[in-house]
Length: 215
Length: 215
DNA sequence: CATTATGCGTACCGTACGGTACGGTTCGCA
DNA sequence: TGCGAACCGTACCGTACGGTACGCATAATG
Image 1 (spheres, rainbow over the protein chains, first blue to last red):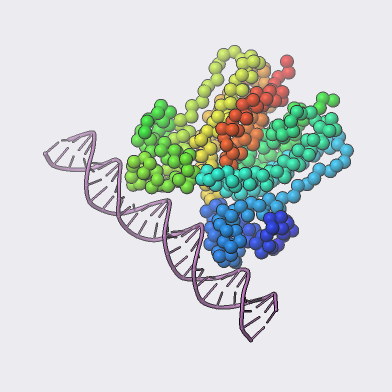
Image 2: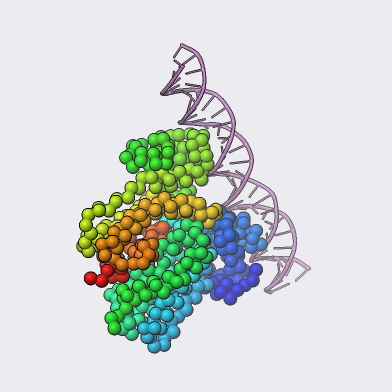
């Protein structure tokens, strides 16, 4: 088990030791590979070369383990902050396209899909706890980046909208459409991502048609 | 157990007896109420007053039962065919808004959410079989309606687009945005649907801005 | 060196589930 | 009326999982 850079960051962000982070990494691997069924306490202990007793001491519970996995994974995500340089229509468009590509990359990632599937499965049998956690931790970051980008565009008189969150919702819908759901349902993520590439610019252009300031 | 009209239609569409349809209805109820954990063979048998042996005889397997539930539910959905009357800009807009509302209604339905959660959970541990089934059976219907509507709009020179499926993807994204995912993750569907109501018209207006024919 | 803490590996327990088998009952049909 | 098919209710079996307990090794600390 190699302790990666983001791995350490994820562990530190969640207040965990490096060892515990490594265990969570293995657990995420199991989840990605075999779904929720593969995420058994015995399986995690075996794969991570630790004892079940330690798992329960560290994370308290299977649900605690899952929550820790989400927090750990969220801690690895680092938002690229938009360059604060002067914004022109062209650079704004480029930033938006880059955002679209990054968004799809995040949503189509193995770990992201696996965690979303896990939280969705859990959502039915108990409260929306994990779902909220995933939403808060994961989406907050990418949403902040989008909000900053939109706000900068408005300040530069390149975008026009009343409410930033509504504009973000529009942008999100134009980019993602039903791709996320289809990937969650098992459609090949790589194929969908490929098919998406040419669509990123179209989505951004559509968004600019809707919210670009009249020149 | 009351045999509803759509219930009979669903059973007939799947080539099942009325009794088997009633059993599937109870199974769907269990799934909606308690998620996948509640969908045990013993539980279904108890709730439907039938024996486990009959379940296995009829559906072969737990997965067969689930597939039958999806097919049965899909059989209940009947698409409202668009009125073939003359299409004006106003009636097209009205039809699109109605479509948007219906789409959200379908996606936010208890049974739809439960089945989607089930298929998503299953997608991780085995192929995309159930996901494809759900996609084909459920989405085909509503997609057909949208395609017909868009095509009619184009024929009436009220809409302009190159590919109907891309236009549909745009419309879908504008309407749904991330609402479906949030509902799947456990956010209160009723609240989201309420919040959506005023947005339906905005989404349609945005779509018309993008694809409405210049007048 | 003694002690204490940490943690691994394994064994164990209770429970719950998928799937099968069996006795008894109802109902259509000859 | 007799027969057979369908089916209900229940009991049963093997397995697998979550969670706990125990024995032992390792290492830090005084």
